[in-house]
Figure 1 (tube, rainbow, N blue to C red):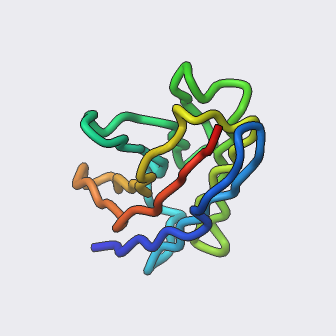
Figure 2: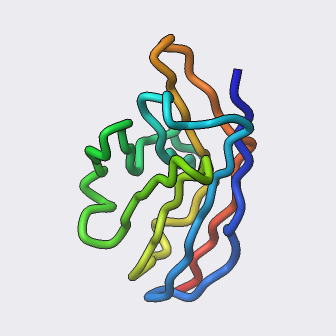
Length: 116
């Protein structure tokens, strides 16, 4: 069992930056995959970026070159630095964890709104 709490969302103008953070309720050093998904109104939840226990990353095409995911096992956190934000990045962003058990865990989500 792991609880995830996101922070850092908000309203930003196009071209601006935000940093999302996710705090886990227990050590993440043994959690295989952590990452971020997002869901815009009327759309399905989609992958933004994930990072595995050895630091390998995977990004959605829309995030490549603009977003950077990182994890701090000592602090049990995973972060998403988002630069050059666009209005189409507007969504609820969810923290995600998948331990080696294969069970998926989700945070409650944080709203990111990018104005044009």
